[in-house]
Length: 439
Image (cartoon, rainbow, N blue to C red; front, side):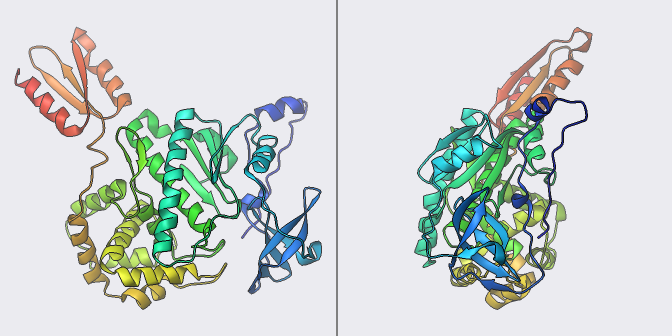
């Protein structure tokens, strides 16, 4: 894991206090990577060490050994790397930081001016709107007990988090990207080193399709919240590298959300409408099966695109319902994967589910056809723009930005325009056709 150093310097001739005011919060080097030698790893065995933390001597837990270094779990939940010679073994008790202590450290430092909100398990640090913070909190607070109880029912050893679960929320996409450079389109992520979920509220997609942007944002927030929960209740060990299809597919399986009168988490295993829509559209365009290649490539992938996420969700959804015993045995085996342990995803999959990908693809597709879902694209506000005149004309769109552009174009020459909003595409189409027929 590479260590990336972020340096901030004042420009020559510029007042440093002014420059500091213009800076956005930025990720610490520890959030970007660990200094680790190329060497075998050994378990930490819950040993405790004294370690210097910004001038204070604190007790940390040895997570793993790598060569001459310890990876240490700090009181705030962060993982850091220290040379063994920089630490001292101790019998002193480990005391996790409280929500108030973490909030004070963050808001007196990088996140000066941010507001905080605490609940039973979570600390929210944000400069977003209160409505966005509330929606995020509602999802996290309902999702945690649902996931915890689900895992316990499957006989997976779980425990309450040792540390407060911290959620960092930026108001804008620009602030988010200045904090840490991430791939385009990412609206949230869980950092396994800092133990934070980081997200932003105002997406550039909002200008084009606000409802879809909000649905995608809320879905991703729930997805990353699942990663954080699983890493803190003992289901996935910190720094353990699960097969990618399983890690991401399971998060999608655990995190379906919906937007009706209010944002809510639907529950474990219910249909993830966004992923269902994507996989259905793929097969509609494909027109045929892939002879199992889609599933095989997904299972063996080291990187996933959006279709890979949808396929991973579809596969998990099928296995959890139709290969139940094997699926939960696989989940228990995944929970035993040690930090930094190398696992071949294809071989582990074959051990539990075989390698008949061609037949499996047909079974997964037939399973999806039997599932009821709400089309997230069709079931959002659609606008009917009606052009009045000798030749009536309608245009239907779900994009407010496109609507304003069309209004300017169609009103040229003094033509009169009417616009009506409808709750979904179907009602908009019906109303538009009725208006064309003069009803």
